[in-house]
Length: 444
Image 1 (spheres, rainbow, N blue to C red):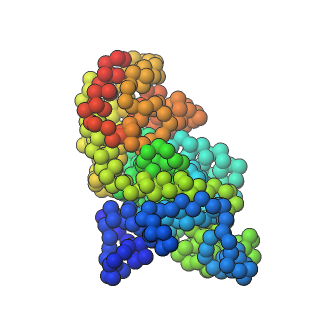
Image 2: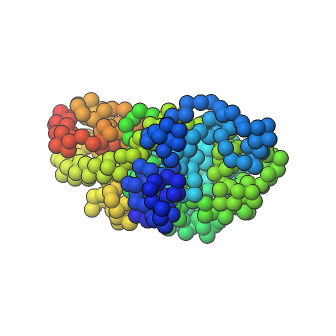
Image 3: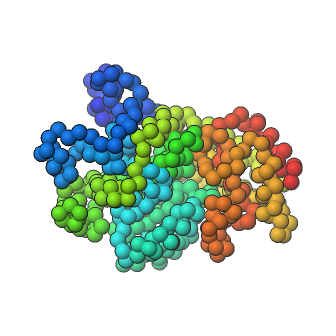
């Protein structure tokens, strides 16, 4: 995997580090952090503070006027959070990052930075249910309209773009359908219409895919999932490429009334989106990441490559087992050769197609929901809860939980059937996972 240079400040005892491109595993351990100069602490400290003493009255004025960069208030930035942000920017190959209180907050922060009342979004139909709800109902309150299209139908993407369209949006691995977004092709379409492409990379993480390297402009994560990896902290993060030309993009280039008509693009160049997201949207919504959660997420990043490889190895074995089980009707995992997304998975996810996927049970007409419930209640190792990306294996019935707020029509468009079961395959001993699934399938 190609990787950006890690700043020399993040590495020690290497006079030539500016000339070296460090590997993924090295950057997940070192990027963005200098060992504490005062105490020598090797671990990232938790700066559990709300605010910071200014050097002088002039220094304070320059910070608030965006003429100098530094810490003002933890709602805007924090040294512990900054390590997480810089490390994520390094792993994704971006120009920088902004951390938020949750994945939904990251999504809303990014979109509110890019959009204004009257604007429109064209998005994949294969989205997390909460995302679709935010795009339909919350956006309506903001005067923004979202159009949803089949992610595989590029004629539909093209047809949905209007003069009011400002963003194209999709998930690298659709939740819970297991579809794989053709990021490169969609990036070409976005560029042709002078639109930024925003991609949710939660299910892949930068270990499996870096959408920015395929032409995406903004990457989002629910850091709650695989980045943290242990189901103990909520967080989100936005990473931006720094390569989109916002000079004629109204939401970024126009004068900012809250900063005496400062023009973010003219002032900050390729950091304009990130600065506006932090200094306006994050500042005003207050959806900041806590320093303690940032610390926990940094701990998660330090084992990301090891965990993700085990996740995808286990997931592939579980998917193959279910595919051949007599009580399973279908399995939607792009790592399987029979998947319609297998070729895209090999292109964009060569190390593995993630560890979250869905399958359906053989069920008589009208019995799918009941059998799905019985199956879930018969499991022993798989925890029934509303999350993915935990070290432990998880299971859920999307139609009655994560996507229950959608209408029948929206469920059908999203590809979520009444009998669909979603698994998030964890790090347990593989034979134990297969045993648990098999005994639950025999119970039903």
